[in-house]
Image (cartoon, rainbow, N blue to C red; front, top):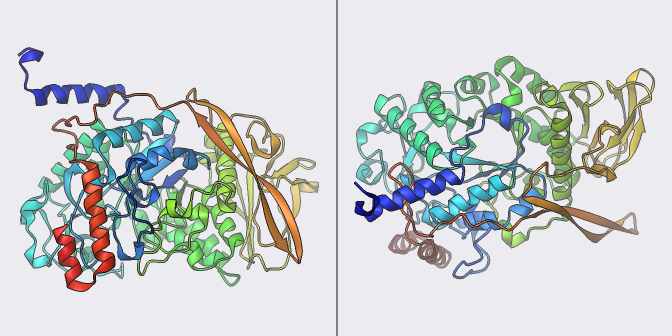
Length: 604
């Protein structure tokens, strides 16, 4: 058959396939390629709207669980904000079509109530929007992580009334485990893997991932996603709710790095999921981080013990992803407003073993909780403040981490941190090769705590000069490698060789902050003067924000309405129309309540 004789849909499919191949589809990165990366978690609906959004209604009532209007194009248009903190990877919300109703549990804005694996979530944008985001991420030298949900499909209604035929591709009851209520204790592994998550309003129908037919379909789906989209890695939702034997075939079909949510505090159990997947989101360590630093009574001992215990039970803790906040747990600032404690947590997360993840808004010291989910704040409402103290700190920490990888490689990334010293209020960590090791000195004393002198063996040679990359102050190494520092105002200290710091762009050194990338043409430095009052005195301080200057986005040739191939996600209906519907639903929830609100939401 000639090209001219082919149906229009086939021609469009061929054109789309060609465009995707030109855009570098299927970039699939390995664990070793991910080790040096630092990940910024984006909740798509709450990050940024498109510039061409039809209208914006003002403050979004996030406590009601409604769509707020964030889009893939909004992320693309604000990548400077993310890259300004020197993140070189983003993880976004699941991209597939969701449960459309407004329920008593809210809407599907988070992306975990999927109903059709082969259609996009139109509220986030079009296929072109998604691919242009992926392309722009890669153009900047960053990685793209996609969130996937192999555990369940969602339904609005009672679990006995599920209409399986609306769920694609798992459209029959036999694809699912029989209903049983979830045991959330984490002690019953059978219930954890076989019972249903969700609620009486939105049951999450638990896929029988032990079934060959379910495994084959999910393996086929993830293989097609990898082949048709520029994905570098996966974040796997509800990993602990899926039998570990499912994952070897799934990960082989994906052909890329993946890290799974195994929401368990017990490391002896959680670590069982690492071998078949390769990486876990480090929940056992998360709890110890929060409890160690949230107040001066926190247990540094338990944090140190967990670091050691995980090394016994997990195959490789340097492959885990480390975090202190995400969309499922309360913000650290929900426990304490003390910003110095938040700085200590950030330093631990970014410089400890593993791949760090920072959740959007963490850099703005957001304070939301989980009952209701006020920890899913709308970032654009707060403003993209590049001068915020935590934004500045995270940028410096990421820049150091990237620099150390550039000069040490696996001698930094694949070696374990040593707990050099710890007591009730401080912990000193050392990581890296001799002469280039990072020394992280942390405290839970808080900004109102007393100054604290800390002495320890640095591992550096006598006479070496070390620079605190957070203040640019220097300290000389004493006899036998000893170092003495003073922790003031509860602030952390991060020391690195002054000589080896050259080329990092930190503390007045030269270098290439963003790495070698022809698409980043230069660096823009903006200065703002901040004023603070301390002990009755007014202190004026200049603050600099360093941002990338990127070449204008190239035209990838998308026609704005192409049809994806049979192996790719279908193009959704107009995203503008979808956002209008979502906005109407939000109005309904705000101005109505109870059953009447649900009915009106369903009508929208």
